[in-house]
Length: 505
Image 1 (cartoon, rainbow, N blue to C red):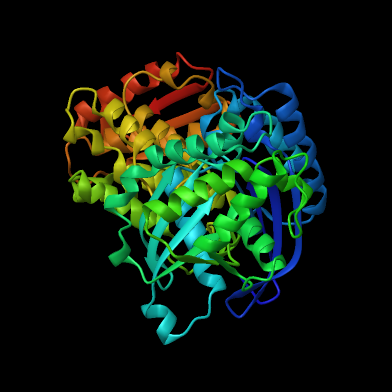
Image 2: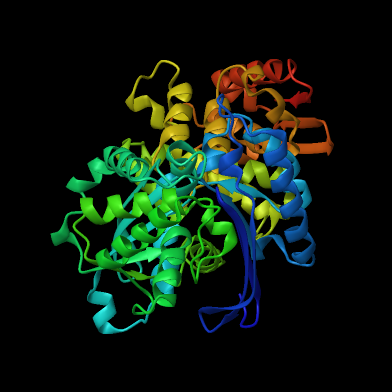
């Protein structure tokens, strides 16, 4: 990306949706515009963990306004991420289908640990970059609407990451449902928060970090109130939290709270936020916490840079790590990968040499990742290993990947062998169908675990719903087992809405 390139991050949080637009300047991103709307989707989950129609509509309306502002941005310049509320929502696909349309860009639902990693990246980039800061061991805490992230890191590298299902919106709904502030309510809320966060004691002990930083939402709001009261700006202390709790108790309710430095939209969730923050201070033996300027959305912006051409993509490293962890046959994975890539390029010539910012280039890269991981399920059992592989990818801790990205990768692994009907409507996607055919044919050609004759097959996609496979003369006689598997493959595709024709051989 060139200096002056505009980048945008959209954060679909449980309490607020945020849009951050910045401009690239010699490796740094400087804000040019920031929009925030209080959506409170976290309040909109019903007892069955479905988003209510009203909560979905509030989200769609906000994203439509963000989408208007993002008109003219390229896909490679924008990333939208959704967090805990949409991780929980059973009907999130219904919400996301329209949300992506009104925003005009994809939306990634990111796992909790990935959210934590991106938060740390945003915080670290906003801090001074000096030799001393590079040596500083940091604890970063972000109390969101329905989750709290904790990270240990140094310089720009997050080292320990976790996400806990406790947050300002969820705790306000549960313990301060009528907006009433009482000693008993705060005591119950803090005890409940400590019960959820208790496991953090073993990983985030006081000897593991030098300075504690608080990012975004609750901690920023508390910092603003304490600064307005005359405390040191940008610092939250135990004494300050005690003072704030006293002010909340004296007010008695969110409606009656009058306190300088607190926005109106924060009052409804401040009870839950303060109780969680006090629990974090007590559990981790924190005396003071610095308010960080960076947050999740800033981490997303810098992640866009890391995914740019010529810069290492963390997802590639994650794929390699998973392949190593599950002792994949590296030679076979490379063999299948090279074969699948050659076949996919025949189906989509625009993929040849395409940058990963191009649609076909992205498809080719994801196909390569699937080939590297298509056999990871064999570590569980060789029987139906493709199903085990898909399960692993749906549940793996995979830094850099969104939930939906990992699922799509898992569906390629699931579909690389066996019947095709298990993939359902995914086969309606032309790019996915081309990726899958290339992968399945590559596995067939490499079934003997030796280098195949890739040029023995000529593939074509004459229209939007059909494939043509032409075999070189004499190939079937030389490789009868491969030819048999190829004929079986054609029969498998006949049970889908794709027409596959086989000629020659």
